[in-house]
Length: 564
Image (cartoon, rainbow, N blue to C red):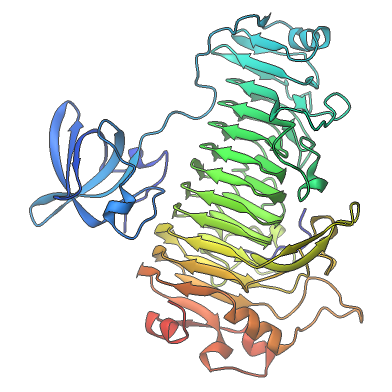
């Protein structure tokens, strides 16, 4: 989907499913919490133990100005993972997180009343779908369901899997389920969810590059109508399903669709994709996708990729150990929110926001991401512009990448002729970077507007993307390597102008974009090094190449430049 993408880039690892596996991390049940005295009483391994809380005790996914605000949702009786240390003779809790339910097909649903029972027999599900009409509930019995081909559910179809129900494509069938607008036409009276998948394992489908085992991108009014779609009807609900061992992707979601409690693991290219309006990923996990780097993660591979989305919500969950980005927003509209999620051990940054009108990221935890960028091990085949043996970690590493992550301007829908206005706002706040492989990377290149259907051409019929309007505030940034924050400007465009030139851009354009991101009220520790254009350190320059050259500075100089 992306024509040009240049390389992008506290000792406790707070990650949603890995905290319990850390050395020194424990599990307990809260018996009493006293925020006035800062005492936490836990039942641990059958014994009652008492711990102290301190002002810098961290809670995964929680933002807040103080301890009370961060822990306000923690109640007695809740189970937690925690890590404690000895300090002045006391047992101090330095970090904790709630225990959440398992991801994927872990339910044990009873057979719904009136459901059509589908045995694990060759082609049985496809026959059942074809012989029944709308609003049918199918109950798939335990076992491996094969030979069903590519299935196109009807309006109101519900598929519930008994424990152990598996849909298997045998590495011969490209897709499992498809939203076919000829079978489920959009209507104003459609319910929120026209198809539901619950407690199913979907594996071994051989879809083509960039496609998925379950293809729902045409739900709602289809992704081209993301701005005008009511986004409250004609979607799909994927609930506690597992998508694994598929050749390319697990699932591609469309408008008004929700994935809740799902697991996207060990797929060849990517875990989950999305396009359209009001897509929701709620407490899902995407892990170990593209681990062998067979797919170019500078193009599309890893945990997720969202394209042409508006008003998307990612709430909770974990995005880890992927051969690419954890989350990747690319050519997206505004209203998108990521909160309370965990990102760690991805080969590229935990989150990349690229060519976006607006995304908010809050209450998230990041650790040990961008493993390839930090080590300089981005494969040469993934970076044709750079023929050096190693990619070099000096520019691109970071936990959060903001590449033209904010946009302002007007877009006129070519079909409806309706005009939409956008004001720049991407807000990164209340997040925690622990043991980070770099912190927050802001990068600018003149790439025109964010029109998803006309990218790579410098389109001006769209909000023009850059760094102006980015706000980075109230984050805790503790890096064990790399740079706590970076702001860079590239001199050349990624498209030719009317004269056929790629650049360089005017000095005034580069300087305005460097000044664009607002950093304030952030807390830094560990590797407190920052990278900015040399021209900024010198107080300005009329030479565009000095805005391209970079200098490392310390915290005092960073603050003297107005970055806090």
